[in-house]
Figure: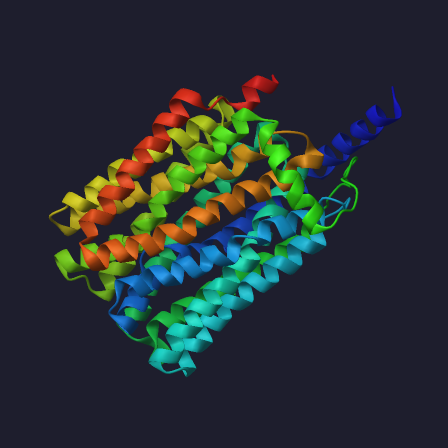
Length: 421
């Protein structure tokens, strides 16, 4: 056996030896971390809070756009930080800690700042949240690709997301109670404080993980040099370019995300408890569907998950648009949770199957940055459309673009796993 072959064999043996421990640590991290982050990312609490503070749809979109803008360049920075390191866990921990501090900031701003200052703080903190999320998305995804074999990844991610969805649906209902009773003087700030506590507990589970040293790493280069190499990386793989296009078209659906609950409120005059139940429905659907998506991923690949989830997301948007009662709205939010969660599972994990390990951090970063470029424009465009026309125009535009992404995925995107086999 060659020296390189021996090193790979030792790497694989270490992965297998530590797999039960890493599996458990990943589940705990995901259970608590995803529960808290889903409260912030859900299309309910934060959009409603910003709208109550501002009465302006464009500012609701601006808050989400600030998050996306923060995430635009930091994936590449995260990739350059880890691609030359044989172990990346310390970087993962540091980026995760900084993400969580922004949630604490959201809570403190709600408790102690006036209305106008609070809106500014929300935009700044969401921008910083996005900044560190961009780094974390690359570093943690790469860590997972090292410690969890691809054949077992789907079930793990499905179980993790399902457990997180189950607890998050309960926390969503509790959050509705906190909002309804204006707990601690600001119910929304109390929800953000709960989210911070859960995510901070989840971060502590990373100390359980055991990461093997990478066999091959990239030579140390400056950020500018790596950016100049990105066009060549794209030109080298046409299927990866198709994946990037599908991901960009699919996430354009985020232009509608802040307005699902605002449209529903305009139609049905929702209470704080109703918002809590819709949050629970959105997250509980991810609980049930992610188990199924994980099984589908292991048997049919993440490309199938991506296409199936995107289809459900499109249908659910139509459901919100034409709903005439709270029960139908709730069913639509169940579809949204399944579609959004499955699509995110598909795109985040599919990118891990392109190229060699040494190139993987930059591929993850490139895909993430491209996604955030869309995510900056999408909520701003959604806010302008909602303010100038109606929520229905936002939903219609979303559906058209996502249907285009679905067609491209079905007709032109090849599963990199089947190609490798």
